Length: 202
Image (cartoon, rainbow, N blue to C red; front, side, top):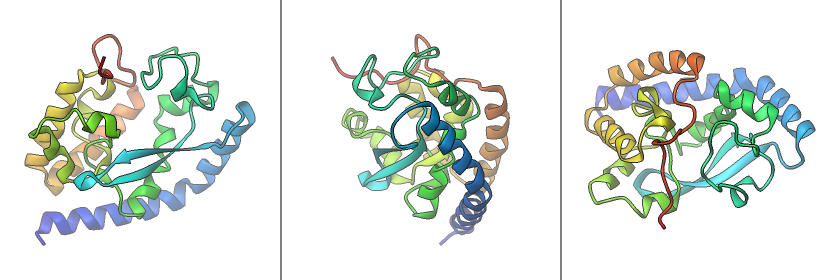
C-alpha cells in the first residue's frame, strides 16, 4: 500500500468517525425538523453504484416531500422546485443533507473525497472509458464538486471525475477538502440550471 493510499484510509477513518460523532446531535435535531414539516422518514435512503459497480444504500436527510422521485420532474431537481420543503431548502443550501453520508464512509462504502455516487440507470449509459470512474470509492465531495458540481453538463462532470481518478493523491484530496468549505459557504453550483446535470434517456 502506497503512502497516499494509507493516508487516504486514515483520513477517511478520522474524518468519518469524528464527523459522525460531532454531527450526531445536529443530525438528530435536523431529522426532527424534517419530520415535523413533512410526513415520512427523515432519513432518505437510495441505492447508488459504488466501487467496482457494487450497489449500496446512501443515507441523506430528506429534503423533499415523500415520494418526490415519482412525481413532477422525477430525478431532475431545479432551484425553486415545489417538492423541496422549507427545511429541505436550508439543508441543501449548506449541504447539511449530506451529513449522513459520513455513515457510508464509516461502513467503507464511500470515501470523504471521490466522485459522487450515481444511479444504476446513469451507470448503464457510461462508455467503457467512463466506467473507470467506478475504480475508486465514491465520495462526499470531489474534483467535479468543487469545479461546478450540479451546474456542469453531465459529460463534463464525468471528465473531471476521471481526471481525479487518474491524478488522485493525498495532496489533491486535501486541496479538494479545502475548496469544499468555500463551495458550501457560497452555494455555488447547487442546482443544475439549464445546461447542467444528467438527463434520462428518451
